Amino acid sequence: MATLKDVVARRPIAATIRLTVPAGAARPAPPYRLNLMAFCKDFNARTQKYKPDTPMAVTITAYKDNTFEFTVKSPSVTWFLKKAAGIESGSGRPGHTVVSSIMLSHVYEIAKGEAVRPVLQAHAT
Image 1 (cartoon, rainbow, N blue to C red):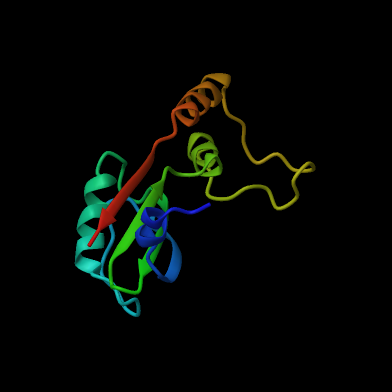
Image 2 (cartoon, helix red, strand yellow):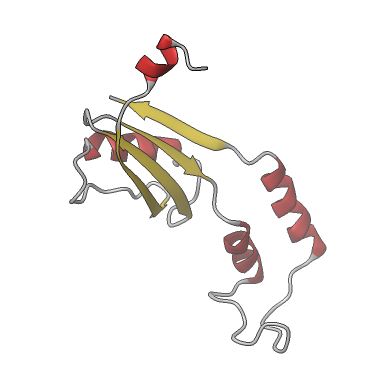
């Protein structure tokens, strides 16, 4: 059963926004009613350790009182595999046409990075 503290802590959610933004390249843009400058500053600070143009998945939870929280996830495994193989996109005919190959050491490094996959979180007012 929910306690009074749990009920008070819940804020009404206005929207949940999912974006893919290049690391360190967040820029304010409409139409969301958020403090976009604060989001851009926090996002760019949290993703500065990644190379520019690394696609980062972002989930923004906007509340009705114009505050927000966001979660930044590391790039997908697919992106790392394409980067290691040096290709832009996968095969047009998977299972029939081989586009590239990667070494086992690349797979090991990607798996090692995924084992400690950090989820970067921020809470802003």
